[in-house]
Image (cartoon, rainbow, N blue to C red; front, side):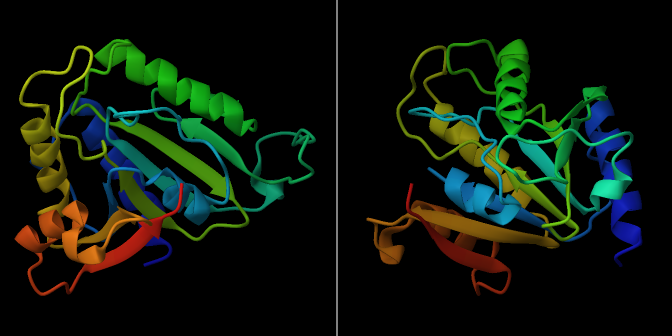
Amino acid sequence: MESLIPVISKLQDVFAAIGSREAEIQLPQIVVVGSQQSSVLEGIVGRDFLPRGTGVVTRRPLVLHLVHSHVDDYPGEFPEEEDGERGAWAVFEHNSSTIFTNFEEVRKEIERETDRVTGSNKGISNESICLKIFSPHVVNLSLIDLPGITRLPVGDQPPDIEDQIKAMIMQYIDNPNSIILAVTPANQDFATSEPLKIAREVDPDGARTLAGFDEA
């Protein structure tokens, strides 16, 4: 499986690029569902790279492939990093010729690419952003970060924004090979967790659902 994952990840990137879900290969992937899941996802990666803000910050699905790599795998001489950590870099599918070693720039690129498709006034889109992060501190893993659950439209969002986001979430978690990471704010009870309620619609027994708190 370890040797198969990179091949499957590349095929998934191709299908995402051409907008096809019909022939998509179904391998296990973690789908992150919640209203404020950034700290959990960044904790898995070990880097701060996701946009910050209020309301719906993630406005397009982010397909994230983590690739366990050594600094020697970097194409060229790896630049020194200000934080003293070396060996992590990122590449976007839509801009594969650019290699990012500064993860603040990764955050800005996500924001730019989001605005390019959805505009800058809180619109959302089903068109995914594909990002690969190479690091000696991760395992080979695929994750999908989705727009947070919201009820009230803001900016350019349509009146049925809640239904649109839920439909997008269901599109990913309905896959029986997906693992659902339902992220609940730390000040909320699991019993009233909206992400867990949505997860139970496709996974009533909780066989492929993981529950977690976001302390952000």
